[in-house]
Image 1 (cartoon, rainbow, N blue to C red):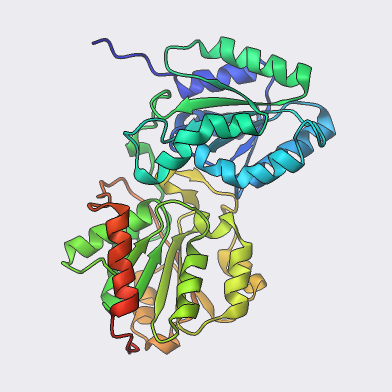
Image 2 (cartoon, rainbow, N blue to C red; image 1 turned 90 degrees about the horizontal axis):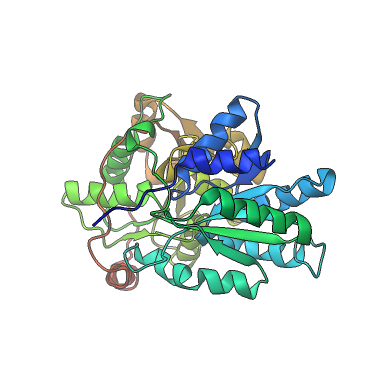
Length: 385
């Protein structure tokens, strides 16, 4: 059997660049990692403008502003799971019945077959029909297609019809980035050792809610490594940006249990208003931990929307009165040695990343949900010291 040739991310970008596309915005995606990497390299060379948005709806709005100001058709990239974030501006801003603003969407298509992770399957199965129901013309760019011809035709229709056109790329269409390239350094703390330290500090009866990507998988790995039950761990494997509000809902409902929200900086930033809600309500039994590596680590290591900014200062502005930022092992050890009531409501831990192989959930998500529910509803509920 002859393996079909995958499209190079650089070739996809060059086809768009040669067609006159000089403005790119979106949210990093693992399917599109090599394409986004090519955009970023061109941006660093001042060849194009590249803006990484906090969420996909923001990217649509940024692109709309670009077209209104210049008349240039912008390119917006995202994973198909992010279409949900983009629906509102696509329907109430750029739609042909509203302001009729053209742009080209490049969408990494997870869940297009049954070989993907379960959180991608529902959205993947409806992605083409969802876009069609929104009035968005869609083309699928598989490995055997001629990318240059498909993209040229899509851009011609964007410009002529002043329409939003979408290009879907199944997850096996593009050549991936080598895992060895996804390295982030800057502090002496690495994700795995930080999560290991946290688990040793967090009593078994406490509740943990973790964000999508490497953090949930690493926490599961650490639980297995230490022979610790993971029944009290809720891995939010999808719904990026909503982890803190799941934790908030649990904390408000179970005031006698300590709840730990552990998420990445990209997740924290995606729906930043959630942090203001948490800070305003400030349940005393909720501890919010943000691991800050400055990138979207699990989808190619691309920088996030606020790379280089102080999340501690952002959090202060959102109303977190008790929060601290650490980047050294000694300071983290002191912090985690405090009594639970002395630990600040928000911990921002600066970490580095290195390539590693992590396990995925070894039970169905429904099984994991039921075990978690049993832990929430039937455990003793005693306060932990």
